[in-house]
Length: 237
Image 1 (cartoon, rainbow, N blue to C red):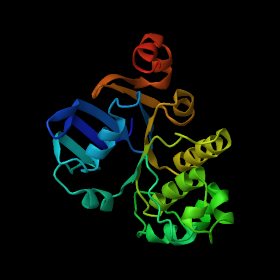
Image 2 (cartoon, helix red, strand yellow):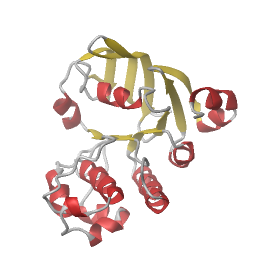
Image 3 (cartoon, rainbow, N blue to C red):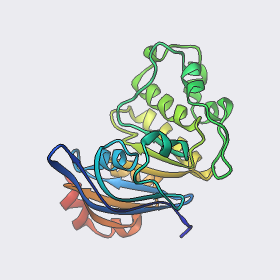
């Protein structure tokens, strides 16, 4: 495995008095795509938000590119190259698609793919056709693509994607899978939270399973597929 891009050790997080994460430890290697699987409410989004420093009450150690970022504010972590696409699509509805993308622009990084409008339009062709349309006047799936593309304009070296397939039409899901595969080919490290096991199988090499704020399984996708007991216990609905 390559050097760790992200290393999380004994991460805990709480909302008020309610403890939500319990000693979560995981690792993402440079250039690797990893899935975080779990049911609704299992702790997937909270894990991402805690890594980003968006939860005030958290404990444990988070290292990004070997640097301890556990006590840094979210904007400092993002500035170092950690991109985040939240579950709820946060676009600027009054700005056009192209203006939304320009808002996300950051300088190139030596350790990350460099994204331009043309490269993003190549992997999200829907956005090319809609570049002059306000964000409020595009579909939910197109808004999801726009949110991801805007984050890529920041040239992150690791991208956290929270439930990228949720609520999307099958045709858009297929486009999303191909876009994520293209990001992988470009060398981008990816950490994807999902309930959709079929989607995760197509984009990730390794998997963590979370339930009630605890990691219940970690291994390769083939090792996970050999454990139907894990799938039935923590992912069956």
